[in-house]
Length: 390
Image (cartoon, rainbow, N blue to C red; front, side, top):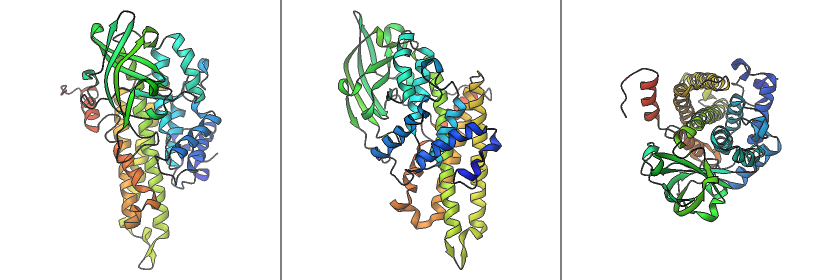
């Protein structure tokens, strides 16, 4: 099956990246689901939930998770393709990055067998939505300096602190919560059941929202948990988190590339339709060359991201390359959306065009889940053997 014929995007040919016909069919399924909501606002809860419900019904939420726990297999490459295709259709499925990519992998790699049995089948079925309580306004990218603490009190843990920019909390069935455990000399992870009933929260009023809802600030006041809620051993939380964060970079890169392709497709259509001085504006090299450069940068970023996903599936770590892919993809996706706006002129800023929300989302990917600067610092040390600067 040719992705060129069926995706609705004349400039995309996924077969060149080595995907099988079966993989392309799965990607096409994600594209078809999300394309129904390409005209919806990214913060439309009905659209977010409708896309998720269709992902569930078609079994796409099982991607990337082991078969023994109800998943369709530990295939990060296919999950990456689905993430890119959904975004390329105009409505990314950010929940898949959070639940299947980050939370699912952390629980699979680090949780107890009882926790795996309880949560992974529900995640694979799309029936358990998680939030990830990691980020704090004060510590930012330096998670080791987080202020939230968990202290022993008999056979219980008492947790107090504040978390910021927590996605999809208003829909969460559970929260994976990170906290300092001073008695253990490190960060520990906990699963909080029914978090909306146990933790006070407030929407943060962001200027835009991703397709996983408005981020929240969480106010955690003497939350009581026990050892059954602890993921892994006390103090080992950061070691458990890193595999999930590497996957997050790959899936975020896929969304950035997909949105960039959506923007490029819109720009191509507009350039072919909009006539100035008697000919379509796509006739002019001032339009053609920027769009051709956009195509090149998106293809290069996608090739790197696909290679990194394959490396993970083959048992590698590729942490530095995951950062490189995220940087390349965020830059390419944002530049694509910026050029799409420029091609559209004033009409690109109307709500009907739908460009501004997606433009802001691609810009956000240059900041999160890891800032461009911190990712470059990491590459300087890990890939270039330069002195550590942080």
